[in-house]
Amino acid sequence: MELPDWVPATMDVTKPSPARMYDYYLGGTHNFEVDRDAAERAIAAMPYTIQGARGNRDFLRRAVRLLVDSGIRQLLDLGSGIPTVGNVHDVAQRRDPTTRVVYVDIDPVAVAHSSAILRSNPLAAVVQADMRDVDAVLGCREVKDLIDFSEPVGLIMASVLHFVPDSSRPAEIVAGYREAVPAGSHLALSHIGAEEPDNRNSMLADFKAVYQNTTNPVVLRTRPQILTLFEGFDLLEPGVVLVHQWRPDADQEVPAKLPPGYGGVGVKK
Ligand SMILES: C[S@@+](CC[C@H](N)C(=O)[O-])C[C@H]1O[C@@H](n2cnc3c(N)ncnc32)[C@H](O)[C@@H]1O
Image (tube, rainbow, N blue to C red):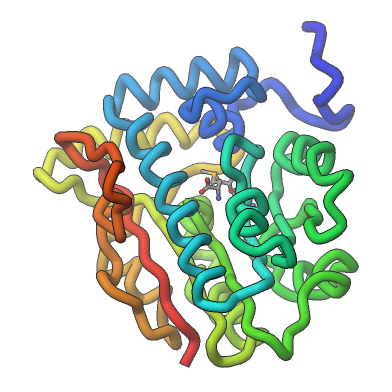
């Protein structure tokens, strides 16, 4: 197979990657046949997968606007994904051009493509790292250069913690980042739920099964389990709700059947 020039030499392109599957859901082009096949199986299992991905991405953009409007000028985006239209730095720097952004992702395509588009942006950088390794992320040069931990930080964990198994203790990972930032810092987090609004959970089980054979299996969590990830943060209204229902824009498209993805924003006490 001839690979495009944006493919890092060391990358395994034989196994589907959730980062590239998500890129496919969003209409991106940084994905391979193996990713598209798996993504189509996920869509067949759960027909509103695409609306779920778009709804999550729209939640992320609204949350970033809120963070910047609340005075946050530095963002640490953990599990940032393959760049697409309306990236975190685009949204944040349009609101205030002095906003600094560090992207962190484990996926080589996400990092290679982010690095290419950030070349001329001195206030944004990308790091390839496992966000579960809090010390490694906080100690890396890009974070040290761009994030001042004496000022409030916007922590973003959008659709990433459902790739972190219970054995990696996701609540402790969030706590590790929370401890590193001062009061007034924000956490914007979204996560796939474990139950569908109308209790047709077999669709979620089939969806989860598709991800078992990818580089990052999915872990479904209930809304109460997702709420525990916000420990130490005061939730802003309307709390942790389906992403489409979190502060929707007036002109926002809301699907008739809402996908089971939850999101919320909290402020460190
Ligand atoms: C569904 S995408 C979400 C992208 C973006 N945050 C958004 O919400 O639009 C999940 C991303 O998390 C990344 N990811 C999964 N596990 C990770 C880990 N342990 N450390 C860093 N990134 C991770 C994947 O590579 C992928 O790019």
